Amino acid sequence: MPSTMKAAVLKAPHRVEVEDVPVPSIGEPTDLLLRVEQTAICGTDLHPYEGRLELESDIILGHEFLGTVEAVGSAVTQFSEGDRVVSSCVVSCGSCYQCRRHQPGNCAGSRIFGLGLALGDLDGGQAEYVVVPSADLTARAVPTGGSANDEDILFAGDIMTTGYEAVARAMRPGDSVAVVGGGPVGLCAAMAAVALGAGQVIVIDRVKARLKEAERYGAIGVDASENDPADAVLDLTDWRGADVVVDAVGHESALISAIALVRAGGTLSIPGVYTEESLTIPFSDLYLKGVKVEMGVSHITEYMDEVIALMGAGKLRPSDMISHRMGLSEAAEAYRMFEAREATKIILDPRN
Image (cartoon, rainbow, N blue to C red; front, side, top):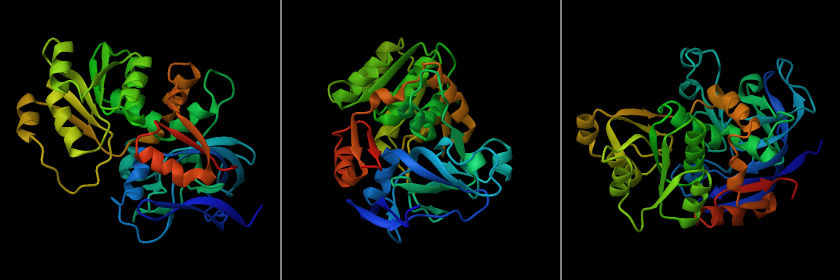
C-alpha cells in the first residue's frame, strides 16, 4: 500500500489541481477503503467548483466512483477485500427516524462525498483511494453477468438513481413527462421515464447535442432557443400540460419554466440541487393548479438496487451518454470542458 496518492483537489473556485496527498485509512469499524478504478464529474461538482458553496479548506472532489475493496473495517459484513463495489454519493446512518422511514436523504447525519459541506467533510472519490463510511449501507456489489457494464453501474451511485427516483416517485405508466434540462441527470430521468412506461417523454434544453442524445432514448427534444417550451408541451399534451415535470437543472429560471409546463393536478419533481436561500417563483400558479411538489436530496440507497437490476436487464444504459474518457491527471481540463458544456459526461481514470 503506497503512502501517497493522486487526487483532484479544489484549491479555489475554477482551480483544480492534481496533487499528491496521503492515502486515507479506515477510521471506523464500519468503513471500507476502496481503490478507485472509475470516477465521474457530476453537475453537483460544479457547485463548489464555481464557488456557489463556500469552502473552508481544500477538498478532494467527486462523489461518483467505483472500484475494488482494498481493506474493510471489523464491523463490515457485506464486503471483503477484493470485492468490486459502487458507492452511493450520500452516506446516511441507517438508524435515525428518517432512515427508518426509508428517507436516507433526510438523515440528520447525512454526508456527501467531495462537496466540503459542514455536516460532513468527506473526501471525494476523484482520487486513487477513498474511504466509504457505513459501507454495508452505502455500497453495492458490482454485479457479474447481465447487460450492464462498469460504466453503467458507476452511475447507480448518483445520476442514474437520482434521475430514476425523480420520475419513479411521481409518474404512472402512460403519463406524459417533461424534463427541463438535458444534462446528465435530465437524460437519466428521460431514460428512466421511458423504461417505466411513460406515454411520452419531452426533454427541453438549448444544447442540440443533448437533445439529440435524448431522442436516442426515445424522448422528444424541444430546443428552447428556437421554441417556446410551454407552447411545445401544451401542443404535445392536448393543451393540458405534462402530468409530470422534472426540474433537472436547479436554477430559478428552470423552475419557473417547469411550473409553466405542469398540468393542473400534476406533479413537479425537483432533483436539481438548489443552494439559494430564497427564490422568486409564481407560487400562485402552483397553488391554483393544485400541483404536487416532490423534491429534496435523493434517497439513493432506497433506489440503487432497482436501478442496478434494470441496468442488468438492459433497460437503463447511462453509459451511452459518456462523451469523454480522460485520465485523472487531466482533471483541470475536464472540469473546464464540463462547465463549458463541451462534454455531456466525463469519466476519469485515477490510474492515468
